[in-house]
Image (tube, rainbow, N blue to C red; front, side):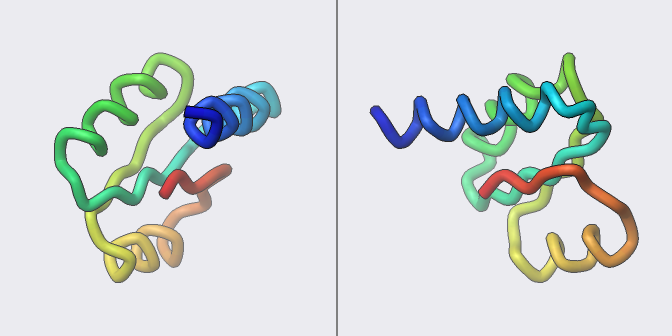
Length: 68
């Protein structure tokens, strides 16, 4: 559980620095949707299920953070 808490602390830190977009990369649809719902009120979310798609998003858009 400490890893998960640490991840959310880092996300909170990033969100506190005026991030307007976050890319969530997760192959599990339920986990991806959960992360997006958790972050959605605060930032503009982009999500994908593959690294290949994530690189395409990063090439076409600027994101303030990436969640894996």
